[in-house]
Structure formats: structure tokens, C-alpha cells
Image 1 (cartoon, rainbow, N blue to C red):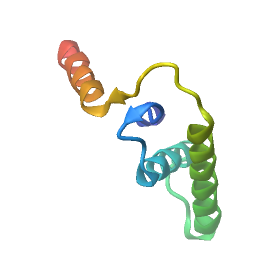
Image 2 (cartoon, rainbow, N blue to C red; image 1 turned 90 degrees about the horizontal axis):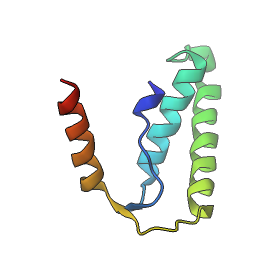
Image 3 (cartoon, helix red, strand yellow; image 1 turned 60 degrees about the horizontal axis):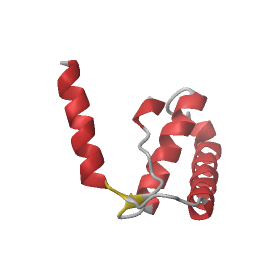
Length: 86
């Protein structure tokens, strides 16, 4: 599942808060064994929020030495790689 977390650094347009939260959600699901029980829902949501905030701090502090990459160009390359595997 974690391999589905998309690269979020140095993209044009920049990563949104929704994308960061989706990545954090996937990460927490992976390390906690998918969906939380109702008894653990609060801890689960708090972990997602904490990881999303840490992700935002990380992205804001990273320095890129190359121009941002266009999302569509990355998506096109991914589609080509997928087609080549079929």
C-alpha cells in the first residue's frame, strides 16, 4: 500500500493539504494494520493529523536544486511504465 503514496516534493503545482493528508492516512493505515476499531478511532485520527503536519513541515523546509516538475509529465511517465509492464 505505501508504494501508492505519491511524491509530493518539488512539484508544480505544489502539494495540497488534501494530498498530504491522504499520504498520512495511507501511512497510518499501513503501520496500524488498516482501519481502526471505534475504540482506536481518535488515536488513529490524531496520528494522521500529526503525520500530515510533519509532512508539511518537511516539504516546507526542503530545498530543491532543480526546477519543479510538472505533475502531468510525471503522470505520463508512470502511464508509460505501467503500459510497458503489461
